[in-house]
Length: 538
Ligand SMILES: Cc1cc2nc3c(=O)[nH]c(=O)nc-3n(C[C@H](O)[C@H](O)[C@H](O)COP(=O)(O)OP(=O)(O)OC[C@H]3O[C@@H](n4cnc5c(N)ncnc54)[C@H](O)[C@@H]3O)c2cc1C
Image 1 (cartoon, rainbow, N blue to C red):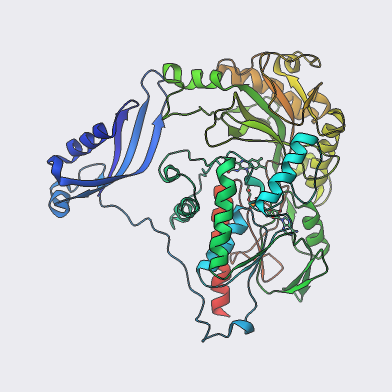
Image 2: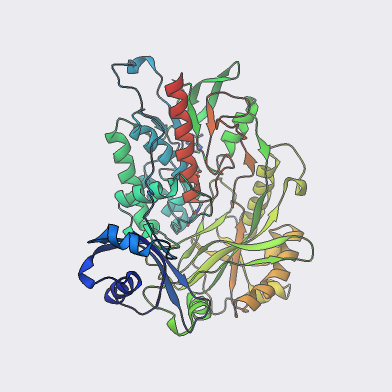
């Protein structure tokens, strides 16, 4: 049976929880055989009386009898089936000689490509998965070279390589999409099988942390391979072969041609060269809105105090997060994005001579600073040009940030007090930057469009009213944050295929259909289902 809305104060033991279940059901203690937490959320609206709200699945001795006695009682019901069900299975090899059917190809091993590949493998389709970057361990070394020595490898970095853009991240796993098929539970369950902490299945705001993500990604690769899938690294797709509106194959940077009639394109938002190449081949794509701005850092203790008061530092609560939005007088909105409690600001560039910030945390979230992007939405109306103009707009500001930082991947940075007073920063205050290889104190208004600066100048004091101290003089901003989402959409039809190219299944963040690890993974599952159905119906 499922119990919902069971509320307990922050400080309670498992025995208190057990007692609360027994009381709610009106049963004898020995009738409760077992219980599992389905969901646990934190209500911190009153920091002096923080409450945990549980949804629980209980196993009882006399379940039928209790169920009929409590029928119609609010917040007690039969446990629904929340398992994910496969849409189809590949025909047995004897029924369809494998050599006659081309393998489905997945391009990209970010969360979208990995889950598309895993699902296809689990359904028996033995996918071939191509990744331009290196395996996650090798890639980690290349990424550290940028962070420690300011040396960027354009094919192996925070954006490119096994695990995709989310590998060096906080690993936040929340999404607000409707999910009647329980695909998000499938994603979380697979992450747990691959080594993620079990709590991600029930805490309201789960996260994995970058260190654990590395082995999770490796274990998922092993599962795909064990099921007959194949993953090839340093396999950069550089062209697509289309004949009469149907995909026929792919070309790799090493000159290899791969015949394919079902291609899942899960290349992420930073595959700019790939967007250009698809456009050149006539694949339909269009410009879409995204956001740009800065990363801001505060002492994590400040955020914890404001959110949790005396309970700050409680192990169940962990490091506090926040979500902020301000609608400015100029009709723009500024909002916080990808908040990383107890984390670090990271260099997330993938192109030489351009600078991009982002944020990550370890599972423990115990670094000194809280960081978050504070960004302003822009639309294709803000820049002129065709479907790819948003890419050039991002490039423009990333190049300026690179030069302003000193042309060595140091990030331009400014204290909030100086930013609001419209003067360049020359000294740091209480907040020390976590960004490496280093920062250069300057005037951030040099690195962003005027309307973004105006909106941020209005938003920061407004945020200071929602989180006391947010606009503190010494809070530190680094820039620029440009890769909030894809600047293009590779538009698809109701069969998840490109509007004008059959057999091409654009997916995930790069195609404009996801924004975050969980939603990208779910989109990967949806597209794998569409490919599987197409393969079994043809
Ligand atoms: C530093 C950082 C922190 C983040 N933190 C979070 C977080 O905490 N929570 C969250 O939900 N989201 C976070 N995100 C966003 C999240 O990572 C993305 O939304 C998600 O990874 C998108 O998944 P994807 O599979 O669509 O694309 P990606 O993860 O970008 O994967 C695309 C893959 O395709 C490969 N590729 C590209 N072009 C080609 C080609 N031509 N040939 C072969 N391979 C190619 C790339 O190398 C890459 O591995 C973060 C992002 C960054 C950069």
